[in-house]
Length: 334
Image (cartoon, rainbow, N blue to C red; front, side, top):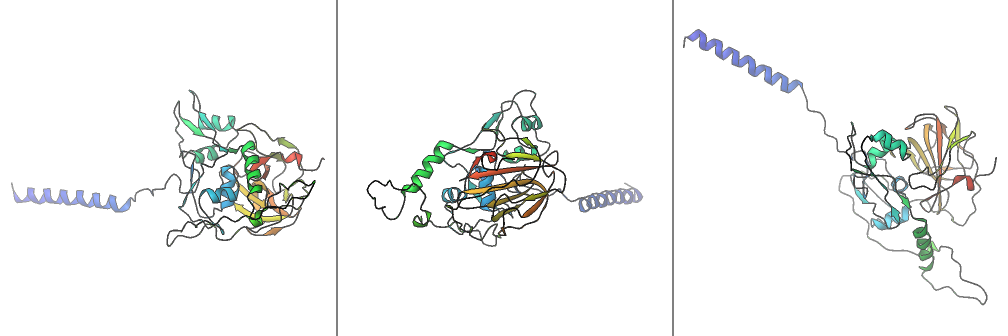
């Protein structure tokens, strides 16, 4: 082969190699992000991967249970420290995991509408990523709901587990009220992985559970979606209003969650009123309070918005020991 031909061949090869090297250096691979990197329920519906910003209150709320039950089930002792990346078990006795079987013609959007979920919420519950492909016969996990019967039995069982046997007086039946101050179950806390930031490090503030709560409407406006006892029904009430309308605390308490990590709720606030009752305010435009902040009844806590929903509204819930109750039965008539 002539020398000029060899030189030309070598030159071409060098140009090809330079082009390949340039392409490799100029194009970086797409970042890999785990399905559960933002912290939500895994596809089997029985496990949750903690994300930064999560609290045990926000996870218990999404799982349909209360904090003490979730903590005991995962051997987490006060002050209930959890950390990003930690996997929590949600297969709590008494919490029913509802499932939907995909049929021909279904889409994630149509199933979300039919079961009163947002698409993002339904995707998060089942570990689905865009473009949200589903197939006929696939079982999708829906939001769970704590069984009322088992909740009642659990409450009765707690009332009998007291350190000292109560003294009976003639003609007086023993009280069924919970004596949480006398019941302390010592458990070994789950040690966090070294170097991991704690998602929640403060113990929930204990408030008197026996104190009566005087509820008030969190905002004026018509109720456009009422409470439903159906397994996939609305677990609160939706109130229509205008963007920026003031949302107020329905009763005095402490903010135990303020953020947007719970899919389907948008910008959410959860307030603990006592050991039994929590209230939640979803789809806000702006949050006016922070976690661990004490608020008074009627205090301006947020501005109404449309975060994670299709129109401007407030989704308001009340939960008793982790179970959704009808807010209308607690709010004053108007």
